[in-house]
Amino acid sequence: MTTKAIATAIKLANLQQLKKERIAKIEAQLETQQTQLLQKRKEELFNIFKTCNALTIDDRLLIGFLKFVKNVDNKNHPILHEFKSLGDKTKMPSKPKSTNVQTD
Image (cartoon, rainbow, N blue to C red):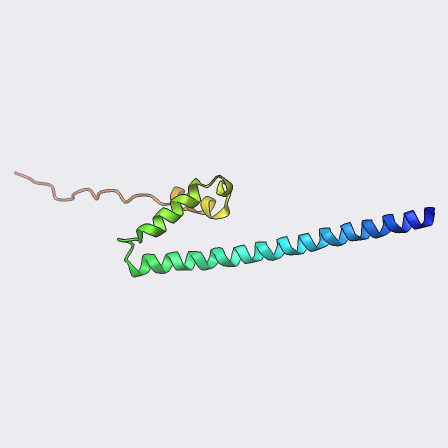
């Protein structure tokens, strides 16, 4: 009877280990897929900016981005950190100082 209980316990432990391995494999696949989709989305955004000369952007894209940003689940999303770092790096151009000095 004890050997049967030990065999059952070993089977359960093996099943739990298999579950953990399958979950880890699926998580790795999803992470890879997310990385690929993020890269594709960056390319799409770049193409939109390039096509529209960065002057006009589809309102739906902006609304979608705002919904993404406002979603609590996306608070620590890598793309938001990347946008923030880009914003920190970019500086608005300053107004050039006039070199025309009037002399009387």
